[in-house]
Length: 303
Image (cartoon, rainbow, N blue to C red; front, side, top):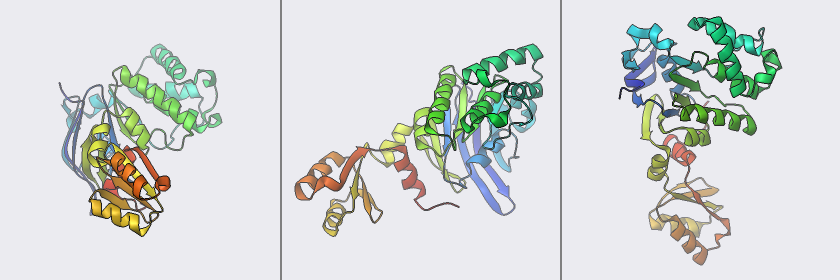
């Protein structure tokens, strides 16, 4: 089966700055593929190359089996893009934002009106169709942007941090709609800073840092490989407990006020600590994608 996206050794330079360095990945039809990474990792630069906003410096890129540069117009007609920035037209109503956008794809007026109605109902915005976008909440505006990116019934939906800044209820609503689209067979490329979002939506993902791919795989496989099924958190460990953990030889992170132990036998270690020390400050929990992300990219702030 031809991959929807086939990127090989993608490179993007801004003068002497290498923003993306030899990034390669494929996205299969019908899957949700994630790009994760800290600020400045190259995620947004990568997807901007995928929809033609930023030209590729080097490497090869194919979408729908077609070389990108030679088939730009045909490819753009088949993709939908929801960017990070809110670029809705505040002078137009909710419905007009969809109808005006449909003209970029030469969609006949009656078909555009029908699709707009269907999309607004799907994203629970039908009751606000005649409101100006400035009157909408942040969650509604974000849902409208995703709806707008679907007006051309794309074969590939590209979402750049679609739920950043949303409250938990709005985020859950967007996730539910994206899951429905994915279950209907739509191919989705997603960048996000929310590890829960990536774990819930993505079939596969890559974690990037400093323009390079660090790992690729299914979320559950990456968790087992880099964090383990379980993680033991020890709060305010004393010197004796630190020495005990170090002697065991398990992988761990010492954060000063907290130890994170990554072991295939965390449950056994939890029992041992309970017998030899007070286990009141120990927490045994499931490994998460956030554990993987922080172990691979570090914990320092990125500005």
